[in-house]
Amino acid sequence: MPEHIREKVHNHPCYSEDAHHYFARMHVAVAPACNIQCHYCNRKYDCANESRPGVVSEVLSPEQAVKKVKAVAATIPQMTVLGIAGPGDPLANPQRTLETFRMLSEQAPDIKLCVSTNGLALPECVEELAKHNIDHVTITINCVDPEIGAKIYPWIYWNNKRIRGVKAARILIEQQQKGLEMLVARGILVKVNSVMIPGVNDEHLKEVSKIVKAKGAFLHNVMPLIAEAEHGTFYGVMGQRSPEPEELQDLQDACAGDMNMMRHCRQCRADAVGMLGEDRGDEFTLDKIESMEIDYEAAMVKRAAIHAAIKEELDEKSAKKARLAGLSVASVQNGTTGRYRSVLMAVATSGGGLINQHFGHATEFLVYEASPSGVRFIGHRRVDQYCVGNDTCGEKESALAGSIRALKGCEAVLCSKVGFEPWGDLEAAGIQPNGEHAMEPIEEAVMAVYLEMIESGRLENDGALLQAKA
Amino acid sequence: MALKIVESCVNCWACVDVCPSEAISLGSTHFKISASKCTECDGDYEEKQCASICPIEGAILLADGTPANPPGSLTGIPPERLAEAMREIQAR
Ligand code: SF4
Ligand code: SF4
Ligand code: SF4
Image (tube, rainbow over all chains, first blue to last red; front, top):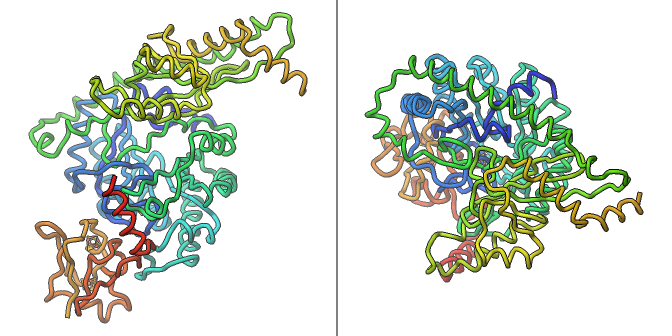
């Protein structure tokens, strides 16, 4: 990855697994209309896919959106990025979206702007986007083959007509590719999102990944399809299944190449506010921001100081990480030529890069891979929170089983504490619970546990196997 | 002659932006079409614009009261299948 892109990505809460613990982002919902239909979307609610499960409560006017952004940026100085992602397609609402960008690039120049789009109207908007210091654009590209597209998109609205089937998909695909090329030509960062739909585009996405990267997309983010009958989407109602975590991980690995960053995408709501994985939207409802007095000039000064401090901390952290990566298992291999296989471990954290969450309180786990070459972040697995702090919860059992299912493939789970009951169940499922590294930095703890596994001989047999195969 | 928007409208704004006659506005609960302004797009477009972009089946009625986008025509979900799914969900 070129240095100037690495630099941008390094401090972006959505792209850097480190930065997202420190920097915050927000979305404003100014763009309700859409010009296509996806089989995973029900416009009665927000899209469950792309970037927004949940319901957006308020669609804002551009003026209201700008006011909200300034209020948030003044209150949460860690806020660095403002995204417009819907609830429909931002570029199908060009006036509202572009007006918001126009005002923000003038009034809040210290905020990075980004936009997500299905790409249909992208080519005609590129010029205008380039004018408003847009940091990056996300295009959702689920296919490059119109036959596959016809199974994902029932129709598009194009040239004042509703167009269906393969013809519609072909137009959409052409527009997406053209838009991608135009943005790259202007030096605007492009990220590509794809929704993994088992049996429809899962294999095909490897091809998509190759093409979009060859054209200059800096990141390809493969997200799992979310499809429940109660969402009322085509896929939900017709019983299309979602991918298993392992299938997703395999596809992400196949598509990742040398870019292993976007693994912590949380498919945020169109009006999300705050750090990734938290939502402070309730603090900034319309009536609340109306009564806020904002001195944005003063806020900018404060923000600059805080950002500089965070950046310093992040730089320190990545330097430390580089050191840790150097700290391979060579020291314990000592004399043997054995190569040890890699191990997946799950971590319960509420942020800050530390193991600081109770197993039962985790609504998601971060998954890391430990191998002789170091520790690497793989992704996150969402779970249903089974411990709601009361014993009358009848679904406790099944939710715990759900958590364990979500951890499939992991051999250990690191958290600040684990209860007695889940401890036994985890062990029975072959996942070693570990509460010994509470409040320690994640990578170091994962490496420590990996080294313990090696020392206790747990990986020995496999090591021998690997050697035999080699 | 004019089209009409009924309460199943989800207020997605899509029709407002594409109407050539500025006939569509936000009502108290959902969007509405001014009967006096709606030209059925005659002279502007071959297809009625609001009906061509609306994503919600049944939300827009033609002048004769029939839905511009009948059940199943936009989502591709056969109406029987949808009814069945709704029954299943309710039974849970
Ligand atoms: S582009 Fe987004 S809003 Fe439009 S139908 Fe697809 S998922 Fe829904
Ligand atoms: S039919 Fe045409 S003129 Fe009438 S409301 Fe719809 S878009 Fe407007
Ligand atoms: S396009 Fe349909 S659902 Fe959307 S606002 Fe217009 S009538 Fe309502």
